[in-house]
Image (cartoon, rainbow, N blue to C red; front, top):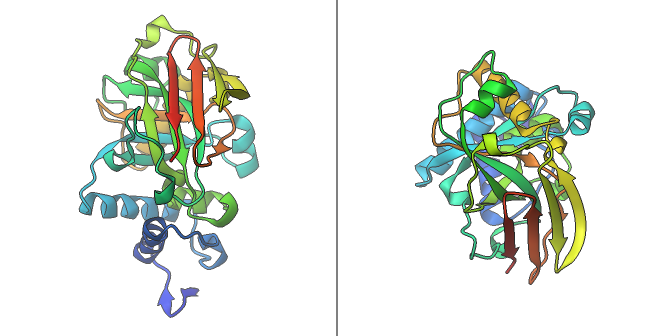
Length: 265
């Protein structure tokens, strides 16, 4: 077993290293460069230990985020379903609160379709139809991601251990029942300081956000977990994430879900 300085790598030690990097706003190289034993199952153990640390610090779990929801990214990483991570109330930003850049390392932002769950969703055997039936409302959202690894360079186990680069997120106040939407065709226009930088539709997320939700629920079931009623689910970036600089205004205009406008400070 390789060591970090004089300390042997363990799940607890890896979680402490990543939590300290987040708290001190310092990035580092991937854990896998130092810890041969960090495989995907172990990475999820590290992620769980990080969340336990956040809970011990007073945060509460509010939901789930999905990562690597585009098929192209999955193929590059050698997986066939999204990765999952945990979001807490400490990551929530209200619409009128600027992105706190001084609390982050090198944040990026991406627009997302957000689900609020009306029913508990537990695999195995979840389909897109049953997943969507468990959703109470659909919202516009932004996720602010912030890897603890230098230049966002990592392997799959690294990013899973780092809670999928979770940092902050916004959820729009307008909630629409999923039956009233064609989520594959729901479009978004992402702009920075009034200039369009990207566009996408819900099909960018696993072909349909409900497909990503179903795959995630089934993957969670393999670890004895489920998506609870009332949970917020960030379904994955619709566009590439863009770097955030101070004093910017970032907007996401959706076809039916309304618009979100946030600033950075």
